[in-house]
Image (tube, rainbow, N blue to C red; front, side, top):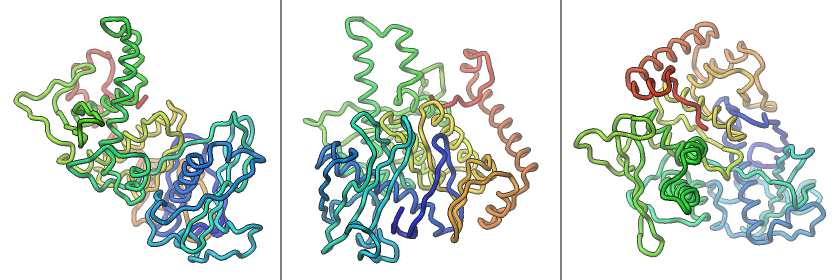
Length: 414
């Protein structure tokens, strides 16, 4: 990143897969990293839509794309000049007028990279692919940013991609949650229709594979096992319905089904607790098969401490199963205490972010966050908590225990 927010000139190397926890004090740069990647993704989307994918390729003749401030949607800023370090947008030592640069490098048949430049003139933003070594055969990673949960409404309309990005950029992830859920369910319905074509029902092997791999199926499994709940989305037609209706049903788990509590009336998604909604928004996005990199800003917000650790475990398993990269900005001392040091990227007010290499390095980090840390004691505490949770799940889900013939550990996503 060159002249983006507090990163005047900074290269940050990230683990290429799995979960990375971004940790450090306030205003150390955690959210700025996520914001920078979100802006990179926005530039890619905007240029691809307006100029086509060829504008990214090595050697392409590129023109800048002009945007009004009302069209900039990935993050919320008072004015576009707040994207620049110290709000200074004028050219200093850059070879062209694009004074803010964000570049991503990744491995695919060798080292690949794509850089975007931004320029501000007369309150109008110009973006351009300023450097690349890509060919038409290369896959460009797709990134998705999610702020802490907020903004859910009772009446959510079907929204186009631009409006969804703006809502999320404004910190209103809840305002698009029903859209995300409807997308997952619609893909599931189309896949079921394809598998059932020419038959009265889906073949057992095909159904088993669908339940083990489909995003909607996995989301429902996770909700049943974690909250004893599942989602019921009313049929939706763009030509007939104005709002997306999603209700929550609760009961006991019986195999792949949820047996509704006697006399239980399902209720609208909006009235559920903030922890449930936070969990749901994270996994609805995390399970999206089109997303390669998840940028999660404090996804542990609103969650009980036991669910915070469980959330990260599930995201780590999902990242391995689906080859995703997950970046999590967090202040949760519970999550950081339980984490392996090599998964923690420490941000300091001075110096480049660095991955920890040993447990003792977490002591100073957590002390800065106002928490005590004793590696051996905390590890024992975590093992004890896990044992209690397993015992609780055995008592809650006897049917599943008999079916699987094993302990009732919460299954890995995917």
